[in-house]
Length: 512
Image 1 (cartoon, rainbow, N blue to C red):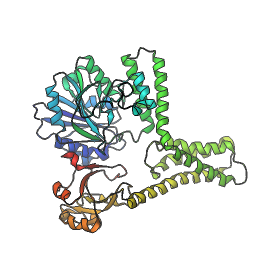
Image 2: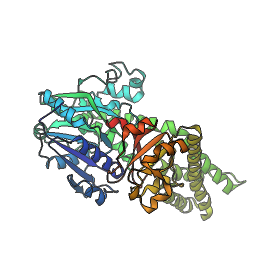
Image 3: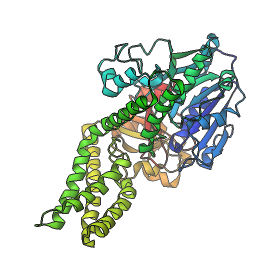
Image 4: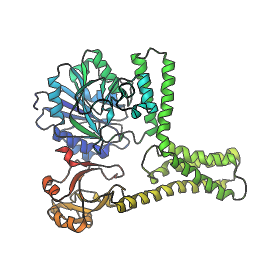
């Protein structure tokens, strides 16, 4: 497919430093031969994009916002600088295949009535993200999704209308809305609509603009002829509780703005509130056992402290509350990750407040600090214990494939071999390099040899995967993919930086 259309790619990043370089590198590759520009907004991130990352992509137009403007406002800010015919809004925690923009632009060119166009969006493991095409939310559709009827009857047009799971994901379809993770729109249409509605902060902007596009007389299309990978939720990991609030507030704003439901606003607000409660509860239920272990840990520490005397209900209740609450607010009961060490920053201040309230309000002896500290340490300890049990299970069961890292010439690879911060999904044996003369002194202790020595290294180590490291600048060492595959080795892309608790592994076949 060829196209004469030009495009501007807009990326609004919030706490996406670990993924942004791989995203821009894939976008840059996919824009080869297309008249284009890339505009990135670092949207007031507490963990900002590094200057060295920006310098690695000199053609990118960077905008630094001193505060988090929200997704819609950040996109509007970048769109004002855009000069090309088509605007693509994509998330920073995505990677695109080489033909993504070429195919989508050709598709838009073939559809004069196209308003918004979205493509197939995949998870990191290659499975489909059903939210890549949606119908406009109605009370009935929202109820079906909230109580699980849409999951129970995924092929039903009645119960599964929210994410349209009854449609074949490989067939082009006119839809109500496409996802803001990858949304293409003509700049002329976008300007007529005055961009995204900035009343929405993080969710709902895509639904709103798609509805307004349809009201202008255009159509929104789901185009499965190409795909992107989306490592869902990276930007919201540091603001879990606020994320729930933003999502359900967005639904309320959408309902109030478009008056689709012919119901009083207070009825809609009440329904959204109960949906929010059910939504939060449904995310907590799968992790109920973690709450139970934490409460048991606090009760054991209190029992050891009070010994033979009856446990004072008020004091014990405070200890439980000020241990459970910070863990809940930190999102520990929602996330499948069991990272205990990072929870100290939540637990220590909360434990201090609990002790002070117990002493000043209930008149408890200040030594109540001992069981409070014991509870804190106990909650972190069992998480670390479970981490190691999971790690060794993955290793000895063979679920974590024996892998070699390609990237010996990359700075800071030692974090991937840090024995104190191992990753259960990875079993890294060492590294190789396609440019061994550039291997740094720090990396030599992990070096197994040159890439050309891979056949003998694999025979010696039983390696099954070659993980090609994409560093913080988007750099990755070159290699012959067909040669690697001929050795019976699966080549994969490893995305991450020195903050390697946040990483993704992608099958490199996706890019070809």
